[in-house]
Image 1 (cartoon, rainbow, N blue to C red):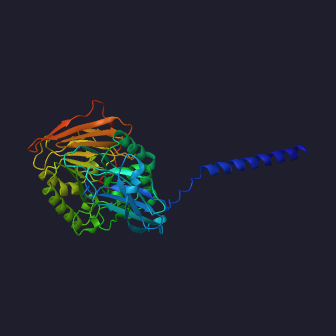
Image 2: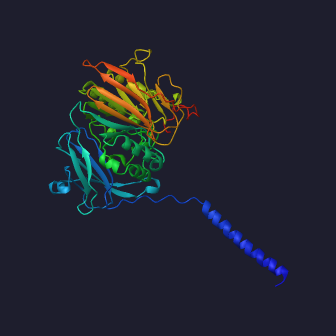
Image 3: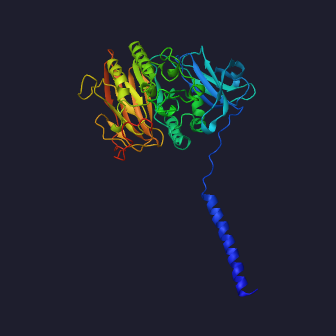
Amino acid sequence: MTSSAKYLAVRALLTAAGLAISVLATAQTVPAPAPPLAAATVEPERIILNLTGDPQHEMAITWRSAAGSAPGKVQFAISEPGPNFVARTTEVAAKTEALTLDVQEQAGFQATYNSVVLTGLKPATRYVYRVGDGTNWSEWFQFSTAGAPGDKFTFIYLGDAQNNVKEHWSRVLREALREDGKASFMLHAGDLINRHASDREWGEWFSAGGFIHAQTPSIMTPGNHEYGRPIDDSGARLSPQWRAQYTLPENGPEGRDKLKETAFYVDYQGVRVISVDAPLLHGDEAERAAQVAWLDKILANNPNTWTVISLHFPLYSSEPDRDNPRVREALKPLIDKYKVDLLLQGHDHGYARGAAPTARSKQHPKDDATVYVVSVAGPKMYAVSDLAWADRKASQTQLFQVLTVEGKSLNYKAFTANGELYDAFSLTKDAKGRKTRKDLKPATPELWTPGKKPPKNGDLSQ
């Protein structure tokens, strides 16, 4: 072979090798396709407990199975130290709902949702249960019913999960469980996911919580991301999965189907916890008026020591450009009139806690003023302003909150995602219902720095 021929041969080999390397590099930089939708299986999945309007005597259980699965059922019994409870179980048939998605890439996706409300339960009692179809069963889980008014209990409050839920929200939820593994329930203040109908995102939410959802009851209020259109659009549609996968109280405004299982209340051991559908306070005027009238009624007829309202849009934002005047106009007069104790909110992707003046006074709020909290549990973060009303604030910080209630005492603690105490206060009431507030926040520096502001004009699509 001549030197010229050798040169050409080597060049050909190098060219081929270079082409192969180029092809390999190109292949490595092409984004992987999105994972397929998680098809429902005959094995019970996405099992979750929800509180009902009578948590002393009832518990709601919901789960998903494959389309066309055999009818669902629940077996339950009073918990015992050993396995002999199995011989004493009661079996209850589930209601089933076939759900077919019709949104974008999910069109035609089908699953069956099963739900049971266990009734006639004993107060302050530990139960064991499992779900299935008679052949395919879940493992056994346990839950406890509510006790008497005034009995001590704790609950966990979580702001928006929304984005990268499995990746980032999961550690917050698990740290909350580590901090208070015996919480009576969890309260979610909206925007549980980002795209209202994305079954992939809902799957992440259930996966992130895993068995926690099946052993610690939840109540949740919808945010704007649970609706499929801008919330000031009267055609906004609630996530098709919401009422299928959750079994929430149906004691909201009568005759208002749009507010079914989004506006409701639960009386738990001396605390009335109210879910307000804040997105629908922006939309249809009839829904807005119905919800305000209902709230007036249940605040006026409230035998509980404490009143807590959960809603997604804050009455007082952690960033002024995200103000929600229509929500404030609708709710603030009632909050002041009935001296609501605490509002637990989300939406602003930051943390702020403080009291605010009443509608009648511009003075610094007294001890009996309502306490407002805005919090975030997921990784999406916005700027937080230097707020006059906030006693404690944080930016770029994921948090969870643990509230302990016993009789006329309510204690609040906020923890960072890595388990450090960040904020705290207490509320106490005397025999006449007069309230005292004590700030107990730690002496550690605020995790707050001014940053880039979010979109202006209160863009509620964010």
